[in-house]
Amino acid sequence: MSEPSISTGPASDTSSDAAALDGAGGAEPAVEAAPPAVATDHYSKSANAEVWWQAHFEQAAGQVIDFFAGDGISLEGKTVADIGCGDGIIDLGVALQAKPDRLVGFDILVHDIEELAERAATFAGIEKLPDNLYFCTSEPTRLPAEDDEFDYVISWSAFEHIADPVAILHEIRRVLRPHGVLFIQLWPFYHSAHGTHLVDWFPDGFAQFRHSQDAILRRIRSSGGDQALASDMIEAFLTLNQITADGLQDAMRQAGFRIVKVALSSEAVHIPPEAAHLPLSQVAISGIKLLAIADGQPTSEPSPRHQPETEQPGAEPSDDPGEPPAGQPRHAAPTAEPDDDEPEAGSPS
Ligand SMILES: C[S@@+](CC[C@H](N)C(=O)[O-])C[C@H]1O[C@@H](n2cnc3c(N)ncnc32)[C@H](O)[C@@H]1O
Image (cartoon, rainbow, N blue to C red; front, side, top):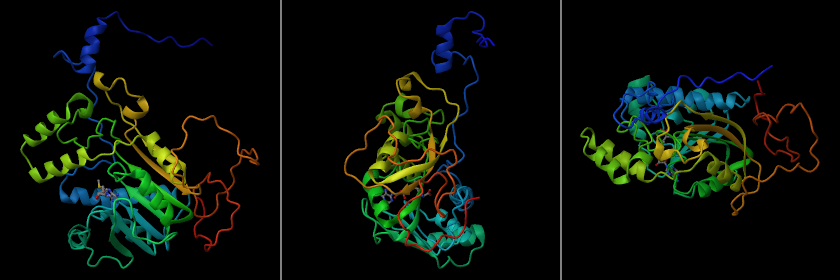
């Protein structure tokens, strides 16, 4: 069978096509401009309080629980930590829906439990926060928790804000029991369309490459509207750590984690000329959800990238990965080490 031929279309003035696709030159775009890339797990801070509540209490909490459940992992009766818990709405959703024995939300900012209780009453008719939910103020590179204290750790929309992700990952590794599982959701990656977190001011995206930092700040400050929100978002923009998907993987390896399940998010975007030099793996991957197992040795050395794969000594080639140990994602390497913990409830679906 011959290769299908790719039509190049009628001969055209390619320079004007390029200008139109770039949105330059004042011409109408030759193709309909892609809508601003807004992933389903992005919730603008400008959303009204009820939209924000639903997005976190139901949708985000549900996605965390489902991502674990997809690998047969139940958080019921377990100890769970959330790193970068913010207002704690997701934690409340997870505490109520998944019924962990204890869920502790950690954040470097002091948590406002009264505000959470008020919102819970207003938007969900919850009269009292559940007894399995706790909040704790942490330090930027230190979690006030015991070694091996948690069965599972979650983190939603926090890792791009953490100044020293490697240090906090080492801390997570310390407080997670051996072979415990870490869930991370990160959206949006800095180099992706809305990586600035400034979608409200730059709906077309890629402002970080199209405009100088000064021009970005000027536009936000002069745009009117909610000034408290504007200064929060400026602060968020200026403190983003600019981690990439590969950088996150490296940081996790360094801290002794092995990523075993990953879902990347990507939307159709127009890449402006100013970002054309960047790898697609940066500009076109807007977010990630992953599960990782704490089964490696933490190291202070950066992990080597792009090394040829070598076979694990003694690894038996097999088509059938078999069932993972209970409470661990599929494709987790079965461990030879005895597990001191009680057997986990719930088996892979
Ligand atoms: C965008 S908010 C996300 C909050 C919450 N997870 C949510 O989705 O609503 C990021 C949070 O990470 C917190 N954070 C930043 N660095 C941190 C660190 N080193 N340790 C713990 N939390 C941190 C910030 O204070 C902020 O509350």
